[in-house]
Length: 479
Image (cartoon, rainbow, N blue to C red; front, top):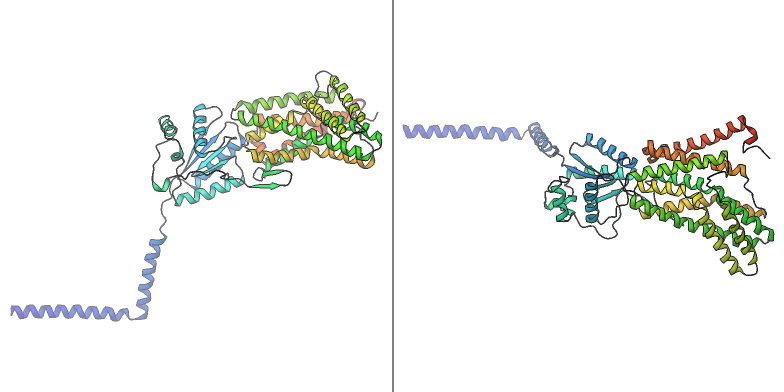
């Protein structure tokens, strides 16, 4: 009984079990049950596949200068990015006034094989940006999103071990977490700088299109610098004498030689100023010095509008004029020899350039300071210098072209010279105020346009009010 009972129980159990199993198989074969099970399977697997992983930490190193407008824009952008990317960590180091931070920047520059050409400098992973613009902003957005999913190379691992130990001990950096996924690659020679969008133009060289405000400022400063009464007076005097020969070929030769040599010498002078600014631009007080220099030269130019050539003046000094006249006579005496004519014209052009430097140096100093503040590299500088010199030449080329076609020389009278001095002084004053009070204005198209626009409007108002209030002394009064 017991055995039979056990066997019956087992058979009964097995029967129930088998019956239940067959029932399940039978039910599964029904179409609606199969579709339901398939949908549940896909739903569960999709939920697992779509479950987002936590974003990885992303570290950005920013080296900036206190008062640098482009640095302020970069820090503001990264601050806004932190709201959307909580794992983004911004390590910022002020390098104009903090020698320790400056030493850390130099250690990174050596590790990345990069020159320190200005601020801001931003480092993320293997990439190094100088300056801040639309392209840099776009690059940073893309890199931050990428490195939230894939670990970024650790910039600290590039540092020399001694430099890293020093930085950690000085609490400037934390000890890096070395792993295969964070090992930084070694930069190669000729590696292009991240964040740049450069084009190469004939005669102008390389221009970084991300620096549109600088391109506009370059064009405007170059134009105002080009209408300097000092250079226009000498060119008009030279053409007036040469046109007396009635030889158009001679006018072409002398005029083109004079313009070529003066522009080349002036470009070399500006390049020298830029090199100095690039070297000392990391010192925060340089911008203040440049602004004060611009304000001082603006005051002299504005004085020249009221009392032209009286007292201290940024005009061609009377003591230099006999030498200029002598140089022009030397050109005329070399009439029989093209070689002697070229030599005499070149010597005159070099001498005039040196004599006029006190009269024209203000704008190159201001412009070079703006470029150094923006962290413009040598390639970008050469492109912008080409733009500067081309626009600087426009007025003189126009005078020269009119002289060649009409065989008549235009003459710049004192009234015109006074107005040009007023415009130059107002532009210098506006730039000085902007550099001291709102340097960030010069980092945008709107701000740059506004600074120059206000200077030109102010110049026009002064001339108009002067004409109404005291017409006898107005430069617009015909005499």
